[in-house]
Image (cartoon, rainbow, N blue to C red; front, side):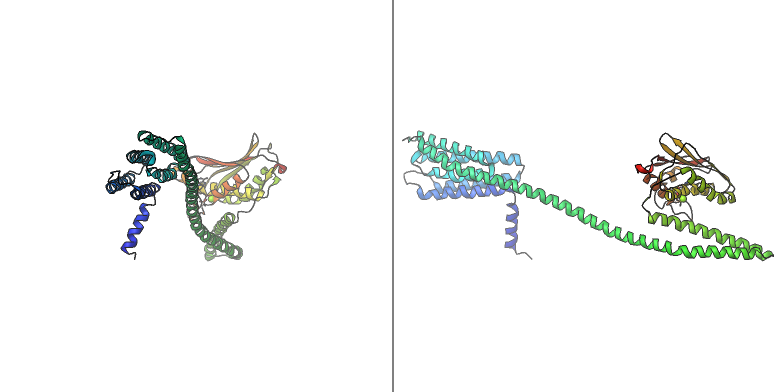
Length: 433
Ligand code: ADP
Ligand code: MG
């Protein structure tokens, strides 16, 4: 618990944190103190009521402090301080004039006044102030003879001006250093904030990476059992086929249902694994036409079972080009599978290649229901799917692979009539990759 005294002290320190207030206080202390000290040198023949003067002068300085505290805009503050400097100079001039001109000791007040102002206004105002002080001194001497010549004036200007110059320069340097420190401080604060944010993100990312590794492991682990179940179901199917009877017919349809589910599960894990592994592409010169033809033959049994007319046309003008055959096959397979799934049953699916200038295009066109605007918005989003057993990764992976080849994947769809996905790949030779 801070004590009241401590709290007051803290409040004062807080008030003095601002440059203007410190300056106003310093100048007040120096000038009021200087003026009071001059009482020691005041000869009785000059009838000046110094205690009252000190009092009113102190009150005036408190007023200045209040003014710059209430209205702290830098421009106004510097106007106030310029005015105060002029008033102080004139006050000293008046005192000089009233107490014997050249003989008076009040010229001593010029030293603290100009030195402290040089701290605030910088070296050149300090030097200018010294010149003005010298001239006021000369004027007071002229008005209160005897005039003693310019030497005393020059000495005053030199002795007031040179320290002011030094103080002003040091103050400027210190101010620049402080601005730099403040800038660095702000930069540091920004960096720290960003670091903190990055750290928070890292924690989340690490957790996600762990979840990812876990899923990868699970997907990997279930592959072998799935394959075994598939194989055993096939064997059971063969056994069942050899026997007659109503029960056996039912068994056949059950076994084929099992095999369907198993192959769906197999496709699912394959897609997850393709997403999770994301291998580095290995580009080698290969024929897109051959790859597409082989792929179409691979899916033909599935299409036939679904009663889909699967057609393929290849453009012989396509030269062999640098592709990662395995990855590109995966991309086209994802699009073909989407086409078959969109058809659901009977329909038409065309896979074709075409050379367009220096690009190879692979188009997968289905006569399915098309893509609604709601689905279109989220088409390529990871894990977005409208299918009960979908992964929502097929299109994402396909696009990633095609863009990895430097190509683009575009699509067009007419609701009720069908959808076309087209991969466009730049024709590059192996040595260009
Ligand atoms: P998944 O096939 O696992 O659902 P995809 O990323 O391959 O994931 O596809 C995302 C969604 O885009 C699908 O669920 C489907 O709604 C829609 N879609 C993709 N291809 C077609 C298509 N040829 N016709 C109609 N809808 C499609
Ligand atoms: Mg898909």
